[in-house]
Length: 122
Image (cartoon, rainbow, N blue to C red; front, side, top):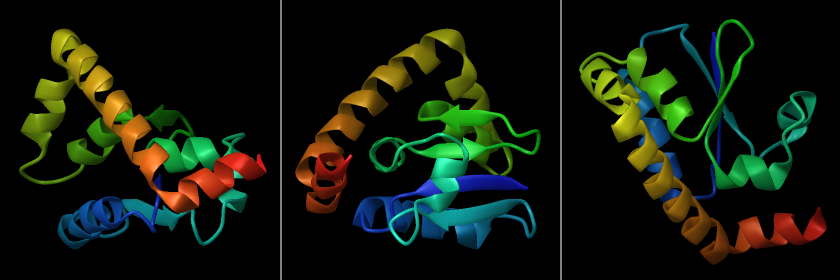
């Protein structure tokens, strides 16, 4: 199974993950809301603030995927999203997507109170 770590207190993140849950095939993903427990993150040497800032996923082989790479991993398993996974995987598009995602993730992290509380605690 693919384990996906997401920020369940972020309304945008939750909406997106809930959509993926609805369309995902059974027994492919394990969805972990890290705002309920960051213990699973710690097992993979990921800090709570890193987990809140960027989407993290662990594939079937135990390999960690972060940010855009985590989205690509998810999209490859979803019907109708495989084309987006392929397109986003192209080097130039992947590079641009990584920049855009990083800017968005930084902005989102700075404006969400629960993210700032965790960042101060670490």
